[in-house]
Length: 64
Length: 379
Image (cartoon, rainbow over all chains, first blue to last red; front, side):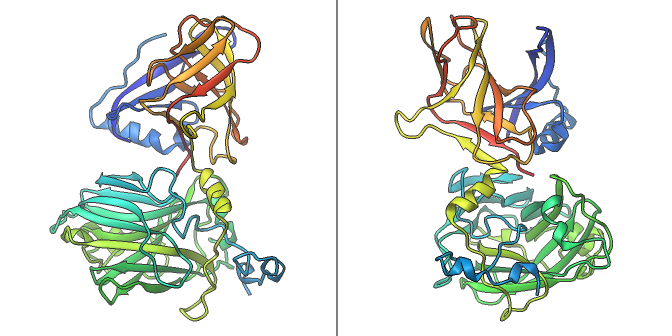
């Protein structure tokens, strides 16, 4: 996965509250991936996000 | 006699290609399934690029075309191999550089090895290999849970000639493997490495990892753009065998192999020009479709896969207001948080529409026009 941008992604819960639930990953080829934050540690791309952040990049938070 | 060598005569009499039960250790050992595509160029990092389940782990050691090749050993029943073709050489690797082809095995699939007990099983690795680059290569078993490893060397003796290799590894009475769906045991085919992993003495018994002892003597396959390396027929058998006693390769039907691979990766693709994929969904507001029920070929390894939507994917809906479509790559496709961990089914959501009929009733379809959605639960 060639990460260009990572954003937090919000969805609404059963009470219609906006909740930060996913990572949204934009790749350099234009593909878009999503990964749930809950339980992400079991996903190999979570580690790639951590490495991308460790390299000095920042996850964008668009807010609720 | 190890379980995996029990003759399965009833099946063979009905025409099955294998004469015995199949171990769960190596998946797609004949390289026949390549869902991501048959060739990927400019590979210089980690990932899955051609044959399913075989991962390239590359750290600053050459650039490669990774492909599913039809160059196979004659008369063995194989039709595909995994090919590594060096396109940018690195004749002088730095100490930490590394290049490995690996398969990572779930802990729950490796419990039959009884690792970490007094009854720990030996295993034997067998495979066919071919390269123009002769010399010593290293195959390693790496215990991810306990950071232990064991390596064995093999020699490619004849340039550009298919050779069958058989390597035995003793059982490990230390370090049990987690009985879960995480990475526990990793088979590493070293292709090149720097001094960090090769400056010691090769560790041919199970031991806590000392990096310098992992790949001692490994040739540098990355030292020339003329270099190629092929592998197929990878099997990891319980028990000790040699080249004459190793059981035959456990060929499976393509469907069986594909289903096993689909636990780790699957794609939802358009099937032909008008072969749209339609799923039930529920319109939420005027821009979103929720509760899209995506059925999968089998149980995913994890309920939280990465879902990747192609930049050209168009989502389409018909509702009481008519036809609606996102722009190519428009909106976001995600798995809802209530998707289960143990179902061949995902609850998904697609945003990016306009003018939907809120809570519209009736037959609402979610259609993927152009490829694709990739569902990745690989280790």
